[in-house]
Image 1 (cartoon, rainbow, N blue to C red):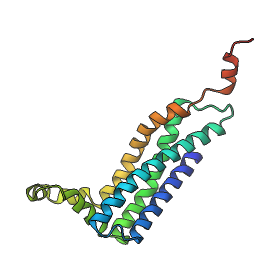
Image 2: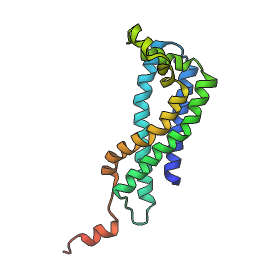
Image 3: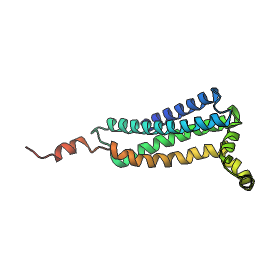
Image 4: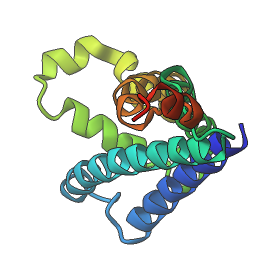
Length: 175
């Protein structure tokens, strides 16, 4: 648990720093700047997630006595990294949405409804505001982080898993 927490916390802190730097640079002030930084942030966040999960899996493998990492353990480690990141990011998302930049979720709402007709916006009513608000965003971070972490770990685990070193050496034919 120590290794996944370390990398999950690192991921959350980096995400928070990226968000605050974007805010301080004024990229959360207008719709055009937000669209640009949102796309960049999504790509960078995914790359950071994969990197932190890989590093945690490799650290877990290196910490094992026989240098092994089962496929199931790799999936578990990756999922925990994402889970811890989501749990640590959610309070920040609430703080950011309610205190630091309350207008931020209005920007998300405007981006979401930009492609909709007025009839569609009217029909969606308050539900659209709720689904773009800070409570929903933080809640989705807690729920979706473990799910996305598990899905990504299913792939990464294939590349990081390793059988025990002693078993590999014993299975090799004698010359």
